[in-house]
Amino acid sequence: MIKIREYRRYYLDGNETVTYVMYVNGEKVGYAYVTEFLKGKEDNESDGMDAYIDRIDIYDGYRNKGFGSTFIAWISGQYDRVFAAPDNLDSQRLFDRIGREHYGEYGGFDQGFGVYEIRWVGSQTAGIEFYVDHAPEPEPESEPDISVLDPLGRRKTQG
View (tube, rainbow, N blue to C red):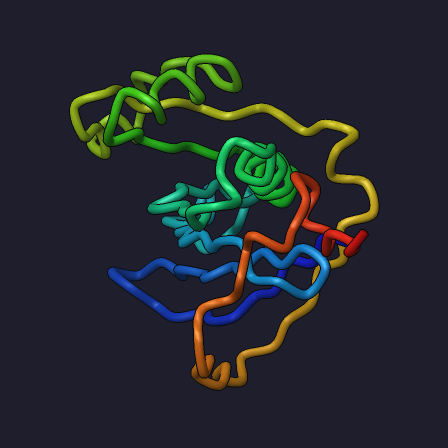
């Protein structure tokens, strides 16, 4: 089961930034920082909400298993428009597949690999549970042993 938690929300430069954390079967697999922009903000009437994915990180051992794509698809379903600026070739290849290059008002976020508008909401987001919990997480006593998880994030059975 996939759960996405709103872990933190804070104001930065007049916009809200949200930290989302993704869990698969209770294991934390990654996080995303998303900045929200109200459209029509200058006249105090919102025409909806755009978002920019500042950073998304899926932890080692969980990469290349579809969790990042699912996370991005879920984020894109929460806002009117979602943008991202990859900072490496691997990220650029991903955003080439799931978005289109953007040359408009968010072009200033370019980190050398373009800015992409993501319009990708797929069936893989069905069944994702979302919740808000801003309580700090306890520090883990040790890193989770990801070698006991199968590619879908389920615990492997002995035998």
